[in-house]
Length: 280
Ligand SMILES: Cc1cc2nc3c(=O)[nH]c(=O)nc-3n(C[C@H](O)[C@H](O)[C@H](O)COP(=O)(O)OP(=O)(O)OC[C@H]3O[C@@H](n4cnc5c(N)ncnc54)[C@H](O)[C@@H]3O)c2cc1C
Ligand code: FES
Image 1 (cartoon, protein in one colour):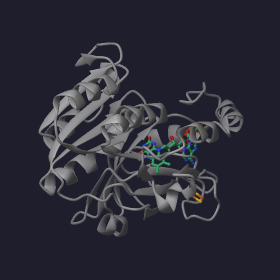
Image 2 (tube, rainbow, N blue to C red):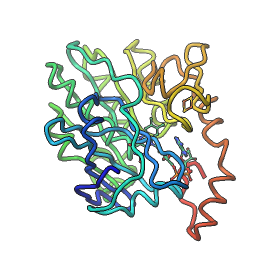
Image 3 (cartoon, helix red, strand yellow):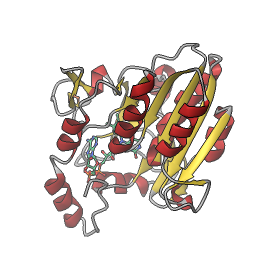
Image 4 (cartoon, rainbow, N blue to C red):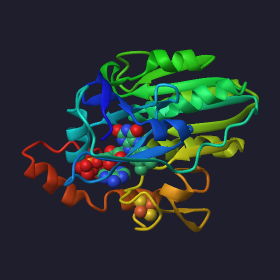
C-alpha cells in the first residue's frame, strides 16, 4: 500500500502529500492524475499528479477538503498508507516550444497548473503566471509558481494580498499588454475556466482548460465523466482531462457537476460534519 512519506498543510483544509508510488512516478507527465481510494469502503477520488520524482519514486498530491472523502485524505499524516492508487491516468498535456504562454491557476487549481508552468519553462517558453485565491490565507504554492514563471501576477478576491480582484482581471490586463501570447492554460473552478475562455475568445488565443467532472472508474467505462466538446461526447478521464476551452459546453458541465449534490450532503451529514461542498 502506498506510504505517505511527507505531509504539509498549505492552507486551511488543503494538504500536500508526498506519496511513495515508484511505478506511477516513473511514467507520470504533466496533466495526468491518479485515482485514490483510502480504504475498502471509500469512494475513488481523482487527484492531479503535481510532481513526480522518478529517482525517489514519489509523487506529490495536493488535496482540498470539499466533502467526505477529501476530508479523510486531508487528515492523513506521514507514516499513514493509502489503500489504492491507480495511475497515471488521462492524456499528458501537449507542451512544445511556442513562445509566450500564460498559466492561470485559481484556488486549488494552482496545484495542477504548477507542473504545466514548469514544463513550459523547461522546453524554453516564456511563462507568464497568474494565480489567485479568495483570501491571502487560501493562496497556495506562490513561491513554487514564482520560480516556474518569468512573471507572476497574484490576485485575491478581497484584496488581502496581491492585486484585489479575480484572476480574470489580471488576465484581461495581460491580454491588452502582451502582443504575442501563443496559448493560455487555465485550471480552477469551472466558472473561472469558462470566464478565461470567454476572455481569450475574441483574441483567437488557443485556450486549454482542465475539466473536473464527476469521475467514478477513471477508465472510460462508466460514462460519468461525460463532457461535450465541439458538439461531440468525450470522456474526461481518457480523452482529457484537458480540452479546448473554446469548444467545451460549460453549461452542461456545471449541470452535471451538481448531479449528486444530495447524496454528497447525506454522506457529509452521516459523518457528522458540516457540508463544505464547493457547489453547495
Ligand atoms: C481529473 C481531476 C483531477 C483533480 N485533481 C484534484 C487535485 O489535485 N486536488 C483536489 O483537491 N481536487 C482535485 N479534483 C477534485 C476532487 O476529485 C474532488 O474534489 C473530490 O472527488 C471530492 O470528493 P469528496 O467526497 O470529498 O466530495 P463530495 O462531497 O463527494 O463532492 C464535493 C464536490 O466535488 C466534486 N466531486 C465529487 N466526487 C467527484 C469525483 N469522483 N470526481 C470529480 N469530482 C468530484 C463535485 O463537484 C462535488 O459537488 C480533481 C478532479 C478531477 C476530475
Ligand atoms: S470516470 Fe468513468 S468513464 Fe470516465
